[in-house]
Image 1 (cartoon, rainbow, N blue to C red):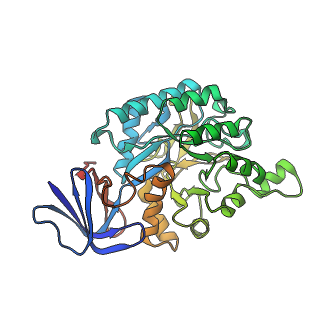
Image 2 (cartoon, rainbow, N blue to C red):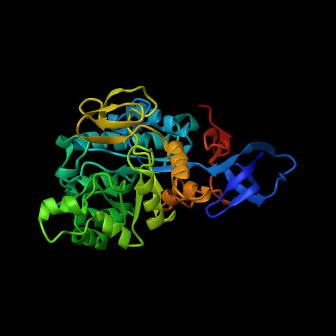
Image 3 (cartoon, rainbow, N blue to C red):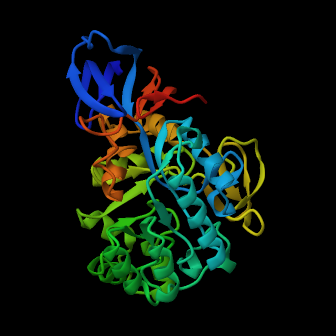
Length: 394
């Protein structure tokens, strides 16, 4: 049976208006300009809206009251279902700081959910983002400081052997960081630096070891002023300058309207472009939940934060990741920057898929890829989500 999606089709570099995407047996078999569909196809009309690829979130901690670090399959499915309803069809569950046992439980839960995946489990797991625990002590942010540590091969090799880690983060200035980066590169991970107060020279050493990405730009990262406090004068170049000066470096923004001003979002887009800038949620368990007090990370001992329904925060300290999904990031990026719709959608789909090594399967509406399709209305709100061409109920 064939399904034909008809409407304004958003491709990586253009929009077919009108266009038709034809799917069969879970794959895209045709993408064409115009309105004609195969004679026996079931036609899904976007009714003036947008037909876009399913979103790909490479940095996400939780949602709907659950956190991946809760370490059980129920929590993983709860988070994945919550994000699927907002258009994310491929997801990279992200660790935080915690004990080795807690990290291993999280990895095991994700492996089990991926192994026995059905659409009822929510978004597909593209891999795990090993994010915590290798943060700089001064840049832990809202994560539990007790679970922070320097990397050791005995620990991270165990995680890599699980076979599900596809993105790997470590602060560049930590002892053992270079070994971590090289091990992650051997595993063909996207190698990243985050929660770091690294200098240009430390970033350069990390780059030589395989690091090519920096997490949530301007958040929990070094700046000229933070490095002056560490080194005095002359002032040092920071992660920001290194990322902007190296074309191969990619980064990500949290476009929830709370973390970054529209001017910073515009600056990031102009400097890195849609091919090297990813939209991420960095969402925590308060996503989709009422304002209140929540745990970041494991439910038994994660750090406390608050949500006001707009953003997570630690009172009198700072922000604590987002509480909204990728569809909100897409709407904000379109409204707050000069990026055209095809670039905005690319930053939420193909670019993260490319960086995470899954673009051969997902991230764009191209022949041969999975028919993970999202229909947005005229205002870019999610109306329908299809996994493998089959509509998912919210």
